[in-house]
Length: 215
Image (tube, rainbow, N blue to C red):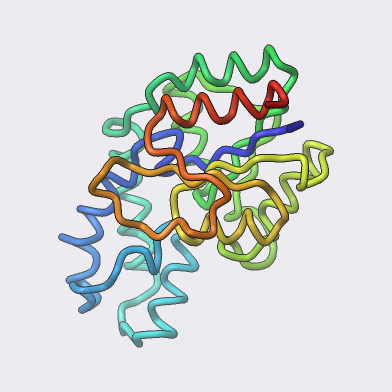
């Protein structure tokens, strides 16, 4: 394993614990989709969420209003509410000690990412936002292929840590070893496309360090 690519939302920070209730209670009623399965949109770039919902369900909501809701909500979620993955600093340091290249690969725009990086004093060898790239984001493979190119590794020699169906699909299509990160026993997201499912931060740490050590 030469590199680890971490997703941000739902992996490095627990933002999905905030996005999901806000989406369920505020956004989805606004567009008439109260019963939507959130796995349909989790992991996607918020601009592409609008495109998907409008094309699939003809939501009839103005694009500017929809995107504005995400942008306003993101300010409080990332700036005030999210917590860092338990043991993240120690895990990143341990991987660096083993010579592993670290990338952050997210569907979020750079200003949301920068808020998290600054707030928790995190550094990566590369930060890749699907929002800043041409072409479709997750679940398509382009964002992970771009990340591998940026850090100079073969995707087959990289591990991606993802929590969502779309993120797992994206990294798998790019040819990476995919770790699906589960948010506790109540999390029923289908992670069957992942090569390994980590049920807790300690499980994630053990799996990544074992691969870094060639086990």
